[in-house]
Length: 159
Image (tube, rainbow, N blue to C red; front, top):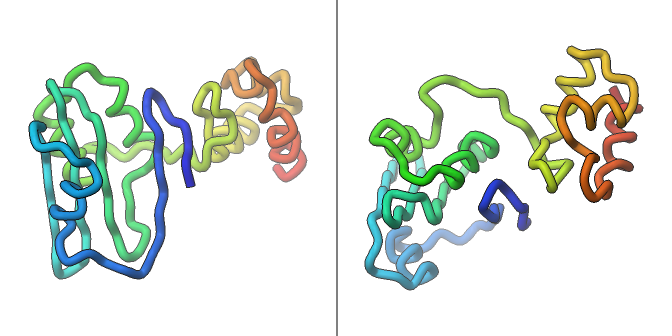
């Protein structure tokens, strides 16, 4: 699956085959040698975390987990808009979790503004939103190209 994020593209892959070396797989697929990189591996749990940093800015990251315990999508994509990662941000990125827990936005519904399903449902419930215009006013979702408006209507009906 390929999803547009904030100044990034997210690819979600699934499979049963594990390479001999995740580090080797990264080098083979990213085909670059001159970058700063962060790496964490827990062989017992089959976790692997990798981040490619160029000039202090996050360029790519990979998170491998056998049981879908992956970083929250909206938290992770926030790193791609930063001009330079601080030491704390690098540590949290490597750990794959924020220092403070943040709500998961869920699957992106509005690609133009990066608004996720969970964010929309939470706003509808907590702010008693009744129509797409109110969602657009509060979250911007549906306020640009409009291709997500049918999805917004379905979410309103479902809630």
